[in-house]
Image 1 (cartoon, rainbow, N blue to C red):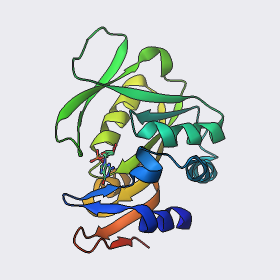
Image 2: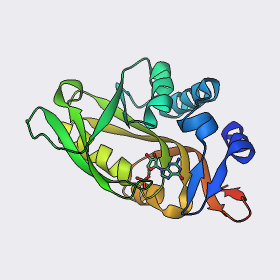
Image 3: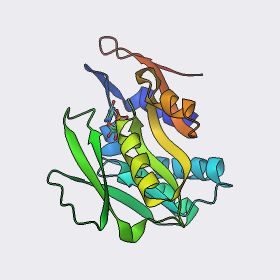
Image 4: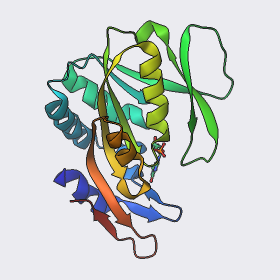
Length: 192
Ligand code: 5GP
């Protein structure tokens, strides 16, 4: 999506450790109009998939997830991060290794909101190694719901998570795929 690539070039900042900061429009301050346009694009891509629910992970997936859900006219469900796992049986749980915080945490989703009658589009702000998406896919599988695919704002292609999922036959659509970035020069190159 050209609009997103232009915005990344204009406002994105490359930090050491493979981190791209896009706090000014994607995951701290939100450019709602840009998120809405991404939502529309994802609707166009997945319009024939019968999506009944958008699933994301707190906190930074919620912004883009809301604007995607708006275009599908369906609920947004977000997995909660939990340091203490309460095994009550009324939640689906999975483990996620955090790319940005370098720790492992549990994610939980209430069984009240996801079941075998759902078709799920997973949405997130970033895709790097794929750990967050793998946790969410695990939860979709536990629920018996159908997975339509994954819609991502920014994929860092060189970290391999997206291509691993595609190799498993999972449809992954990213609005921008960063192929290379350099924290010394700040240069960002996109996949074509
Ligand atoms: P993964 O689990 O695919 O390795 O990483 C995805 C998660 O880590 C996303 O939910 C996102 O919040 C965070 N993340 C990964 N890479 C970046 C990055 O370069 N910048 C920011 N802001 N978040 C990232």
